[in-house]
Length: 100
Image 1 (cartoon, rainbow, N blue to C red):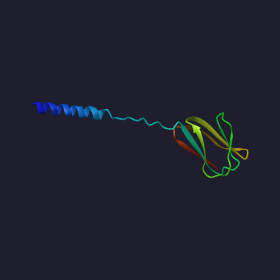
Image 2 (tube, rainbow, N blue to C red; image 1 turned 90 degrees about the vertical axis):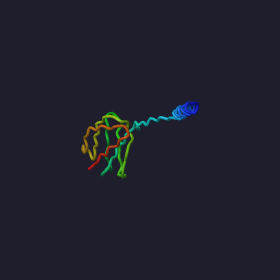
Image 3 (cartoon, one colour; image 1 turned 135 degrees about the horizontal axis):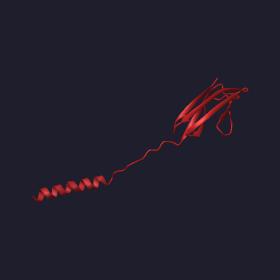
């Protein structure tokens, strides 16, 4: 009987001590998003809501970091509006905008 009680006590003690080492982590997504401008970007000017205009060069995979949210993107090239979109960016997402 004493051996049975000692065995149960040891098992309970091991379970208690093993449970103390539990680590819990929380993964948070990035709070920023990215806009990628592709195509013929030479001389294009990007207007995003009330932010300062962005003048693009003819580089491959031009990307800009922007916070997550809803935006109105207008791209003007050679005096003509070539892109007019409303986009919704989630945290850590990216959106490609092709300029003709």
